[in-house]
Image (tube, rainbow, N blue to C red; front, side, top):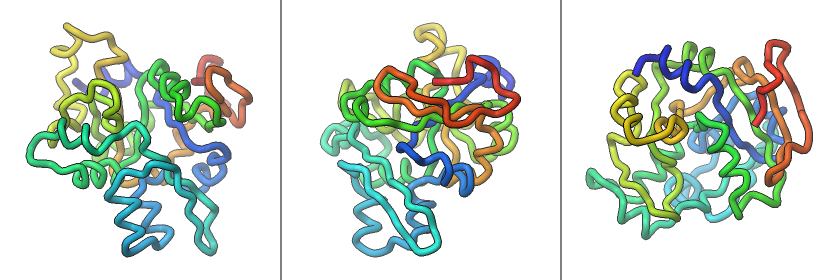
Length: 230
């Protein structure tokens, strides 16, 4: 698959953050767990628990001179089921550390709504970013990977995953998979190594959402379209 084909098929990306996260994301970028742990100087046993193990609940982080932030929970994961679907000799710790080293985006509107309506999140307001795929890919292509699965979930029929789960755009077998899958189930995630410090440059709209309702529009770029929303 080429970059042009990816952008044509998935012109928008979506990211779900905790409520109230937009000012910090706008000013400091979108940061992976590893980037946040570094930035907030989390070390020792706490760093191991937050960066190498499943997080059953969201965890607030604070540091002098930094805005408060939240590490998202990993409720859709289960250690036992994860261990049973890993390939290439990987352990659950390996997988958590891989996930925690990257920032994640959904490539279809249906996927972001599935997450928003999930039992763990449906009754809590979330901040949802809608982004321009073309501009983000052009700026960060050397650090971008794509995935055919929800790599952070194992609760329902967990799919196999391993070293080949994340592939470069040009290495992704879109046409082969398209024979059996709809477009929203073909490329599922787009991820960027470490962080996207300039993410605000690619955001088209920001909304507050709870369950199946858009509660408010927090911000909108002048160049956005009316349908730029979750």
